[in-house]
Image (cartoon, rainbow, N blue to C red; front, side, top):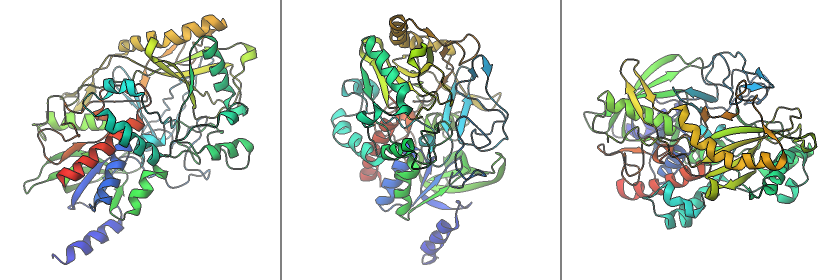
Length: 515
């Protein structure tokens, strides 16, 4: 049996999805930024890793020959187990634009809580599949408010540079930006910001800028220039599918099981943890329930996924000794969206690259940073569109609801008002300077602000509160959080570089001291 063990393990790894009854050294729940960092570094340290992912692998083209659906033509691939789309912009010119779709394990989850919709990526690669790729390192002077118990020198000297290098972060070519038609919308945004006295800054991104130049020139299949963003990007974006995941798979020590959803983690009688996992089909039905044992478990299901799972496990007695801080400190990164109507001489372009590359910085004075975002409709809209990140101080809490057997979130839509007020410090002034008005047809009828959503969920298992200062979950040796749940609600910028850098920091410490 001892001699057969490694051979059997190798066979199981080659065979595909994790098998019931398996005993693994490490189980990672989720394949987003934190989980991918953890799996890569553990594998490089000689540890075999099993990763389970609730979403699909996204490696097989659909009937149109492409893996991902286009933003303007959502289909079954677009949404996670919905029968109607739930687009961030629900209306256009006063008309609702959501459409019926087949129920399918699609790429974008519009998860609805009582006071907010949280948009999350579903699939191998997590949120990297559906974000705009804006890879921003926070200003050093803001870091103390983001992660107060983390050494800033270590982060800025070691872990942010490591994360940026691994993610393939780069900047748009400013000379090309100034001339290409697909960034006319961003140039209008720059001109108007500067005329109102606001700094416009180029923002780093993980898009392959050389590929985008070729897209614009018409020499390669179009991706960002074709408006692909919400439901995946077929060519140019360097999601985790092109960075961390190929590297971790190349180690030969990592197995990924897509369409596997963890439902329970509890101490095993012989040590380690018993993990129950539902295997799903593409309509979301449970086809098999598996039980595996793991010596160590890394929770990397994203801020919402990790927080919901830990909240449920604590409340239902599976992990009763988890910290009372579990579920607390959740925020929306201050997200709020808005559109403005421009005059005819400020056309924003029918062709708009879906990858944002610039923003308006009023963080110090007004508490807002506004990305000049695309509105890739394929027609001229004369509209400027923005996603703002603000210093919203409100924090919500996840709690177990025994009546519904679900986890609730205490966020209230009214808590977005500080974000609106901070964003208005930018856009009221621009409207006054340009003699323009807000669009009221994008989020409903006569509704100005997109205050119903977030793309940037953060918190719920806050570092050094629900965990120790490296993500070890208090009360249970061998359990770790290693994703956006560790960050208390706000990063002042798009959060995924900080999530990646923090994961790099934490897993380095865990490997050095725990294994």
